[in-house]
Amino acid sequence: MKGAVREAEILAVVALGGVLGAEARYGLGLLWPTPVASFPWTTLLVNALGCLVIGVFLVAITEGRPAHRLLRPFFGTGVLGGFTTFSTYCLDLHRLFEAHQPGLAVGYLAGTLAAALGAVGLGAAGTRRLLAVRRAGGAAA
Amino acid sequence: MNGALLVAAGAAVGAPLRYLTDRAVRARRDPLLPWGTFAANLLGSAVLGLVTGAVQAHGASPQLQLLVGTGFCGALTTYSTFSYETLRLAESGARRWAAVNVAGSLTAGLAAVYAGWGLAGLIG
Image (cartoon, rainbow over all chains, first blue to last red; front, side, top):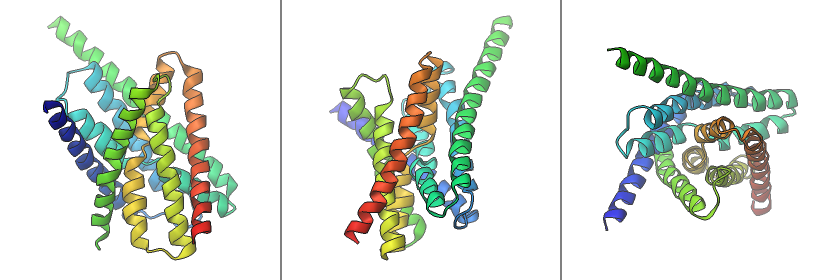
């Protein structure tokens, strides 16, 4: 019974976070729509930003201070998962290929990948550095 | 119906479905590769191809695009977890598996969009 309640709580916070993340992505898409057959900057930046934040967030809660058990499902799985999108990325590629823009498609494919992996690596490494500095400071004090 | 409400309704189903998919896959498979995220991204890309094909090429309601495309598929799929899991593989020394995860996810996701789009043509 207790397990079922915990499971329901997790599903609820994942859903809530997912809605918030998706609304943010939808709002940015309305603000900066991507014209037909042009480079999808908005989706690229949304995905890169989400990757930067998840790198910071997951290192902070797994290697830094322990967090509330619902924080990871809410923010990591929900908000960031709902904010970033793999399906739109693949659909954008399909669109660019269909619009006979193979150069843009390949640039977008590689550009998103480089930005996303670079951002998650940067977020994780930067947070680890910060945690190490804090620990050293704590030991000296 | 309001666009933001359609997106919210889709995302409220898509995000928990990704969580459940990941958990179900983890329970069954040796988690060397992140199959849960792979499965969610594959499914979401196929559905997005199907819906967008139906809306753009076959006259389905644009509201369907917001509910199922932007909301459900956008929340079901994830780039952040995909990137983080790839980073974890590379950090743990499994660089080759990290590359396999990237190449496999991209190929499968793109193929899924094409398959979904093609299916929309057959139905519509």
